[in-house]
Structure formats: C-alpha cells, structure tokens
Length: 498
Image (cartoon, rainbow, N blue to C red; front, side):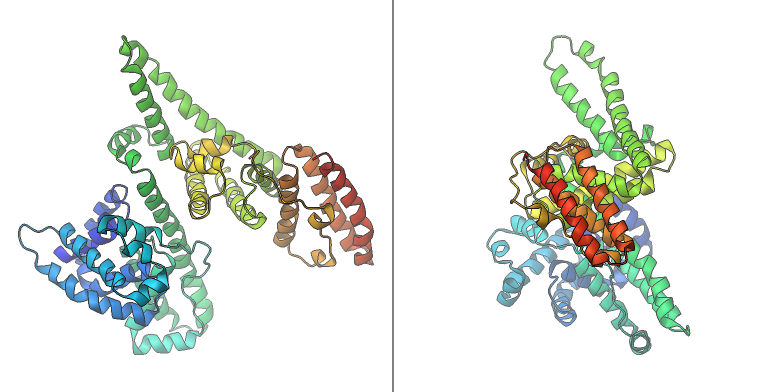
C-alpha cells in the first residue's frame, strides 16, 4: 500500500498543484487505496509520468526510461518506519530529473538545458513550465485500422492499453495520472466490445467519443487547477476559510466566494488600523452583498444580451469587444476564444437563474484560464497581463471591464486588403462564412478601435447581404466584382478619419 500512496503523492502532492489538489488526492485514495490500484499498475503509472514530462519521446523510448526507473520505485515498497512515501516520491522525482539531465540527447531534444543548470526545487518547477498541453487536439487516440487494432488486442492487450496511456499522457501532460489509468481501462473495454461487432469502425466512433470528450474536458480543468496553484498559491492556501463559507452558501460559484474572501481580507486590513474597528466591520455584510449582487448582474446582463442578439450576432459583439481588449491576437485566435465564450452563453443562459450563474462562472474561469496561458507563453499586452496576474478571484470582472488597448498600433491595411469577396463564399458552410465575416470584423476593429458598434455592424450587414445576393445571381463572380467596390467605398469612409 505504501507504493500506492507513493505514486499518488508523486502525481498530486509533489508534481502538481500541491495545495489545490489535496482534496482530490483524498478522494482518489479512498478509491485506489482499497483496491491497491496503483500498486498493481506501477509500470503504467510511471509510464504516464515519463510521457507527461518527456512529450517528444517515442513509445519505445518511454518504455526504456520506465524500465530504468522501475527498479528505484520498487525500493519504495519497503520503506523504513521513519520514512514517508512523500520522501521516497521526492527521491524518485529527483532521480527522474537527474536521469533526464544526464542524457544530453534528451536534454537537447526537449530544450531542457536551462532546467538542468539549476538546483532541484527550481529545476522541478522549470520542467513543469516546459509542459505543453495540446488543447486543440481533437482525437486522443487515432484508430487507423479497426481490424488491425482488434488483431493487436487479441494478441497483446497490454500493447493496445499501453499505447493509449502513452498517447493520452503526452497530449495531456497536466491530466491526473489515475484518471488516465481509469480511462485506459474504459478504452480497453470499448475495444474488446467493438471487436465483437460487425461494423467495428462505427462502434469505435460511438464508444470512444465519450472517452475522448471526458478526457479533453477534465484535462482542461486539471491544467487550470495547476496554473492557479502555481500562480496564486498564497490565495489558495486560504481555502479553509473559503470551505466553511462555501458550505453555508452552496448556490454560489467558488470564484464568487473567493471574491467575498478577498473583500473580507481587505476590510480586515483597513479596519484593524482604525480606533473603532467594530464600527468599520459593521459595513462588511453590505460589502459582501454587493460583491455577490454585482457578480449576478454581470451574468444577467451577459445572458440578456445573448437573448437579444442571438448566437451569431452575440459572437460578433464579443469579437468587437475582445479585439479592442487584445488587438495583438491574430483574428483566428480571437475567433476561437470568443467562440468558446459564445458557446458557454448558449449552454448556460437557458438554465435556471442560480444554475446559469454557476455555469457561466465555471465556464469563464476555464476560458480565461486558457487565454492567460496564451499570455504566459507569449505576452499579449499590459491589460491582459494585469487581469491574468493581479487577482484570480477578480479575473473575470477585470476582463469584463478591460477597455481599448490604446497603445496598439495596427499595421496599416487598405479596405481592398480587408475585404475579400470571392465566389468561393457561395460554397462555404455556415461556420466557414461566419469565420470570414468575423475576420473582416476583427480587422476593421484593429484599424478603427474607437468606431461605434453601429459603424462596424453596418459594414458587416452589407457584407452578409452582398454575399447572399451575389450567390443567388446568375453570374456570381461578376456580381462580386461590381458590388465589392461599393463595400470598399463604405469601408474607406469608416477608416478615412482614423
């Protein structure tokens, strides 16, 4: 059982998010401890660790590294009375990182030289920061030939399961290890079931899709938890206060409770310096009420706007707002970011008052978390940096209130460069057309960030109408050529006073 505790500590306590994931560890231990789950899956557990840290290794290279680490991990089964699993996990991690640093080819392949030149504590954090989460990956495990997979499974089930663990681990380096092991068992069951079916390909698609979706969603949450644990550890440590408050107010999202806690701490700091602190404290309840009410109002206004505009126009509005806030981002990134926000509104806003509040706050923290990881990798601007780094609790309100980035100077684009009308738009699917329209919108905003919503919308409406008319015309290409000049002229009048 000590090895089970060791590996759990290795994945949770030591490797990632020490404070935040402690409650998850307790839950996991209740399950895994009773079945000696990790004890029985030691090789797979270490395989997961290696693939998550060394994402460029081939499957065969991972197995070689695992074999070298297994001998040391086995020694932790026989801990002395005064030794704890965490001490052994520390030594195993140190051994693992030392193993990497002693292999120059591995260091060069993963660009780890800066990590290997520093001490153990800093080295570990450095390795963590090198992890790359493939958030846009659509399929966790490709099935090129169902018949071949079934034959492989028949001959060697370990190989199929092992390769699933390898692929999932390296593409989701922040995903909790035991979750990967559990999903590998689900995947294995799906394979065995589908290999009995006549239409194996269809069966794989039906049964593997829920696994893929679950892994993608839970990986995003685990990554978010790790980010917050590393960046805001001082706030996370206050979780006990937070826990008691949340038990009394289960209808409030965690982040709203954290906002209340932040206001409370600021109030304490202010009141303790006064001659009559009790009188000062008496205003606390009203302050807390305002924090909760304001959070509710923000979500209500957001959902009211979504209901008023509809899905597509609401997405357009978000494009305008966030292009102003972060014009440095390429149009395609802005489209994907605002698409996720619009999708959250579509999903959450029809729910009951309390449920949509919980749903929107939960979705926003993950979406903004992804934006902040993007900023961490390649800084966007000062405003985005401030909202990402200043206060986790008030991150969403900060982004809501962020205004035009006045420091941004857009590369000059003429209207004939911005507007690109072609016959291919007639064959485009609805989603592709929306993307083209929003690229136009984003480029207009970057060129003229202080123009009114109505000015932008006027051009977009004309663009949409023009495409519809010309696509119905007998000679579409000629129609586009004739009508495009009118739209360019309107565009020039907008940009003329820039």
